[in-house]
Image (cartoon, rainbow, N blue to C red; front, side, top):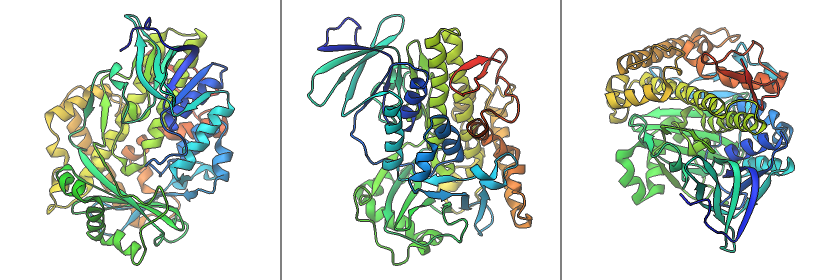
Length: 499
């Protein structure tokens, strides 16, 4: 932490400084600029740049992007439409799928998302921030925050010339991703999930077979003995393929990532057969095989006076449900509401940011709880990976951390006060979803039994509200606070008002 009185070569004044130009940073910067505030966005890299996380949910496309005024540009980009997800997961060896269109509250015109090349998608969002008046500066490295005993006051950063500069602001937003250098200024170290302590190795093929239409754009996730694989059709001539396995495989993967990646694909016939005779991609940046560790973590706090964390700087959860960009942009929109209301002096700052933190933890907790139950649903008694990821093996420390994380809000049950109750609830969620999947073969095609699962329906509820706000200017049902005395979103979705 740097003293706010430390001299620098140049000092500038803003209302908000955003660190990081990915979806979270672009979203919060754009949403604050829409209210006329002065926003500086500092991005270390120069766009376009490579990023993983290519499979979106409808809430980002038709909710956040529409609120920011960029939905039509995303639609014109030619990304592959994604109408749902297809899984080889659970007791049945046959693949099953869910369709966004069969949700009772998701209108058909917005019942799809996209598979995106993140270099292009992120560029669209960042350029939109520029058009809205955000001062976007690329190739800029934030070195430290400026703070005193009361609050964070700005950041110290360097540009391409290496000169040190200061940017002072009422608020600093850390949206600089899982590699953030400054997230420790809020909430100390990250808490990593033991349950999801996995490693991913991933790369790209120059094509690949597609599922039958109209599901040819679906993400396909297939469980196998050592873990699971994703298969994402980005273009006709480009497919993203990754394996998520136990961290005990780390040494083998890091010794030769490509050989390990190929071996894992070959170990899963459902994915291997889609790639028969298909060469690896050779165009940059898709010509590399990459590795990522530690998929799931959260922080004990997500804000302090003058500073807030969003996106992967704040939290991340296992990617099987394509929740990464949704959580990043949703959390960024929540933060923007608190920033806008705080800058306008409309509501007490602590109340505003406690609303942000409560809702962000709530949404993260929903996905975390559902994904634990989703893993538990898969049955493979031969597999070390799957046996180690049963609810019955959730350690007390993990459950206590989860209870502390969500404070009972993930389940909507304020009585969730101990690890025993949490474990029982997760086990019931796994059974609830498993029963819904079991009803899929008897579905009449007019409804999806998955949406009859309380567990599944709840995890998509807030995303659906976002879509309704983007499409209709507000949710179909009156929004209620998530806690006594809480706040609700304004009509335009950009500020908080009393519930």
